[in-house]
Image (tube, rainbow, N blue to C red):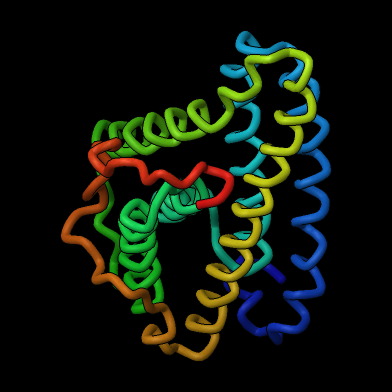
Length: 218
């Protein structure tokens, strides 16, 4: 194959054989990394969050690549960030915001519409906005690690749990997009909420109040 789009010539079963093992691999890495930084307690949270986000972006990049999407493109990098946002959403309202953004990007790509290139400044602002919301969510969820005795266990467990959510989201979203592109059916990419008018709608976070449900049960 000479380009990512050549992957659409494959059957979904062939793609599944490649991406099916990714979740187990990344959950294992997240468990080890989280246990190491979690043992440091409060001081370990900032580097842990950075490492966790980096690891999961790498995981999403693999799902995207194996399903025929070029993660060097601006729209695909935005899509990947919103996958992280979906996995970290603390309640249904926040999930709706992230899913609406994912649908907007996926439908534009599936319909082969020319992507309106964002200027560098705007793109950086969007990424910073999403990253900031994601960082706050993950930091809040990981504050239980401030007790060093339990930090390694909690840190490793949370990282594996979050990574599993990211991998599950990436697995289903990219498979759906693969089928939509393969069969030229953009209607396959659907959600229970309409796509927003702008790419950053609702990410002035935490405009959306948290529910009473703990992050690991949302």
